[in-house]
Length: 365
Image 1 (cartoon, rainbow, N blue to C red):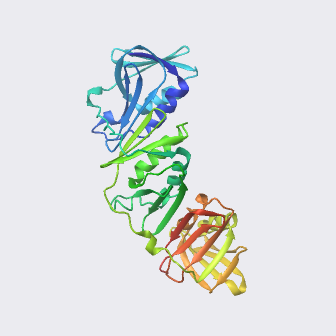
Image 2 (cartoon, one colour):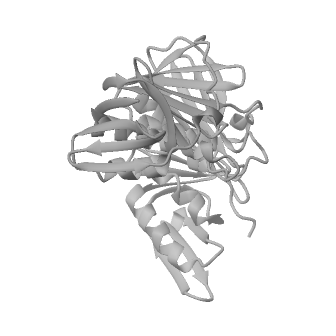
Image 3 (tube, rainbow, N blue to C red):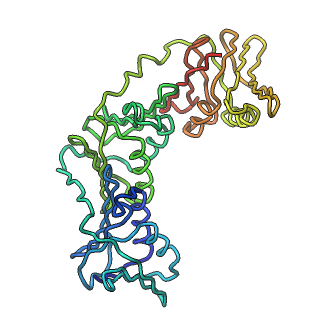
């Protein structure tokens, strides 16, 4: 095997492939990137639950196939100073050359590399790459890191009426992001395991194409763009009917600057201790919106910020992170906090951003 390509192209593809490699000690081949050269130069990676392949431009001098550890390969390419890189096989190992530098990487038998599932190419939907990334990023932190309940450990994507809705919940909080897709007439929904949703975002951030093709069929999701294909399993479960738990009316409402709320919660985090609890005190008649956090180890803080208030007086407790996590996803300088009452959910929205909704349950105490 012998190929010549640019450092930029090969490194970008290796960084995408590396994210999908596996870490099972019993299967070292999963930690590798497979380089297959025929008429095209194709890189592949898999962790058995998801797979990645991409075709890169370059000059093919000799065909061949080889598998090398992804971490070593990416570090090698990063350290190269030249613009062009030559890959060739030397006694069944990979020789990497560029502008006076030579690196020999020990290969692993490629015979054990798992085959990537083929996509039938049915029911494809074309989406904006940037909007898909933005939608998943806006909600993924609200999914459960555990797959004990697969529906809670996944990101739900629903495409209907020319819009894509991304939703995630761990049962303590829920995030929903609606992204318009005016050119899309197709409809469908899919549950993507959180790990794979984050892998997909990482890969799409390295893709330059404006649009991506998405196809969900049987038990897998296939996303392709610009010579890249990412395939992952999907969850065979029903996402909770979350619309039913969103309060229709609020007993207390507060509108604050997002920056003020962020700073108040950042300070509360310092004083909250390990349990990360913060008490919110909203007294509309007195025009008071304050936060209280205390711990025996650090001390106590009480801060008030300017707010437009209405409704009933309320004292309610939350996990700081559960409120703070959503603020970077709101594309608005001001946010509205709608309280449904003691022991009931808080709904956070952007004043000028109707595309995002966040619901968080209060603490018992």
